Image (tube, rainbow, N blue to C red; front, side):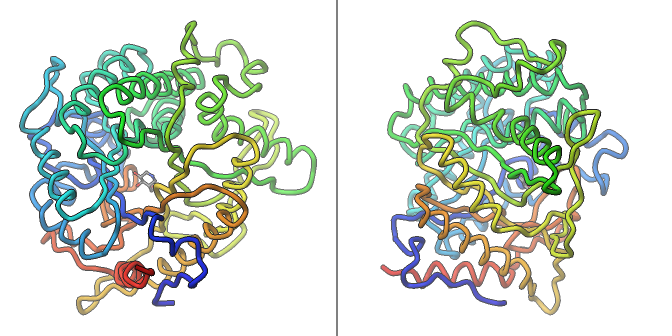
Length: 445
Ligand code: IFM
């Protein structure tokens, strides 16, 4: 497959539907010298933590090449660019604003504005300043207060140049991978830690929403969650129960507090020592209205019963895997969106990330990534189906604009539609970028 097509009748052809590309600060920016150290800088120094022992010191040198990158984005014909602010680039350790850091993003925002590209700004995409981790990080509820102070600085400085603010990207990853199983920064472990970090992140979201409402009432303000819809490994009732339990822990644990102001009922059956500390008033701060929910979708997860935790994840029984080992399963996106739509009264939905890591090769100036094109095509079709089934989806962002630092996998996994040669920092549009561009240009005017 080497092209992407939207049928004439496709709801995605409506010009009000927003198409974009996405990145995050730590994964692309480099320029470590001009920001505070983050938990990821520290984690990258831990032996064995990063598959290729790399770090984010240079990454895609986006701080240096941002103008070229914005031209690339504009050339794709997208409506929007989703990127994140590095907290430690715009706020000093004493909490004062860093004018140079703010100016970098303000100039970027102005350029996007000139090019008529909507800015979707993520305020936290995992790069917690290390000095806050030294005081307990997301296990310390004061970090939520510090986050709101940072959001106050940013949202005052950027005034009306931001179309949409997302408070957090994928708090499940920060809390579970970072504080419960320890395969992401800061590399801590423990069930109570995971749930406490999740609670303090959600609290940070709620406090930040109050600030955004005040400072930036015109932008669409919300949060981005990642979801892996849960499937049972068999029709055995124990496996079905296992899938349900995993769904409550990993998916609903983050959405139900936002939508209904309470954690899933499994909270009551969890051992006391695993439960988070929740203070009076927290749940109403967390559950205030949001303008949108960002949904990041890559694949599904399959579970079977296990005595120890009640569920355990099973390896997919298919060869149709991306380079991350993740099953290509577009039907999961339809199921996820329609199930969520049945369970909750959802705000506008944006698919804020979707994409595939492929073992791309640059040959004679070309990257033929047909598997990525097929991945996008099947997921765009899934999106159409979900819209037809009544889900209110307003936009779609390909992850990622360009190859970048894929966290614990380092630079070996390539998610970009633009290939990055890390030796020369040369960018090359892959076939998927050309197909995305052609699809966007072919939309009805
Ligand atoms: O690269 C990440 C991104 O930072 C968050 N969502 C998932 C992507 C792929 O793993």
